[in-house]
Image (cartoon, rainbow, N blue to C red; front, side, top):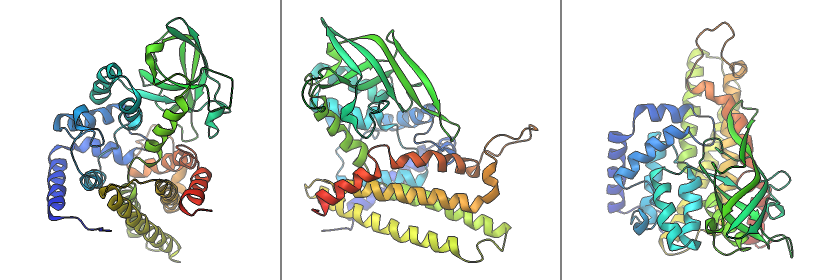
Length: 395
């Protein structure tokens, strides 16, 4: 196992660093720093995506024939690392990193030719229709019905917690096409235009006071069967394939270290203005614990990177990354809340119309509240622990 980088890889890292210095706009860095949601705003993400598309670096994970790079796993890791350290936003993964691999693996040649270029250009902006009321972690119990009607399906039901559905023009859905047999049977993977008659999006305003998720209703929505990916009733296979990319599709250590850097600067600023701050050293000890756990995560990621570079597969260890990464992020959020103290009450603009701070501090409370959901989405922490127990520890 080799955890070091070659001279060629370090030269590539410098090339990426210089590109970011020359091409990453300051307003995108600022928007990323103050963002409190899972994803940055759509216009910010698409602006940065367009810059990377022009360079040919938007989708290193894609095959070259579809617009990807021919980078090694180490180069992909270094690119991701430098993007986080420079303050670049994560591109919205719903189309780029979740739907696209499914289309490449299971779609028809026509679907690949029609859909992939529009995902890459940002012409089509996707959301994910998986969860339903009563069908979240128990995804196989979904009930959104798609009944055959000639060359079409008639779709009825709803999806919930649908991130960016109010911004998307397309949605990829798991639908129920057969009620016989066990729950995993009878699920199909269907692409639906959000502008189709009968599709309605209702906002869900979270406790972080943001509009990020929605409930999507389908009332006799007519969808061509040509929009189905793969075989009818085989959607569970495609759904599991997609979840591999949602749960373990990237490394988190460098992003978390970047967030830890914001926290440490916040602590430093607070100590400068209030010398008695953290006189007991309690917060300092907790930050030290985060740094130790983060270093362990980074070493784990490098071990996985070494395995992948040697032709292996990340496997169930990706659940370790998801579980540990989520815990570390939430701990950083909690520590930031401890640091700002009573300033955390000022979530809303002042009633007297005085200026409202639009800096990092203003995003701390919404970020803390929003990130509580990270324990659930993409597979709950309990699910990740079960995977680790069975597949990694052999229990």
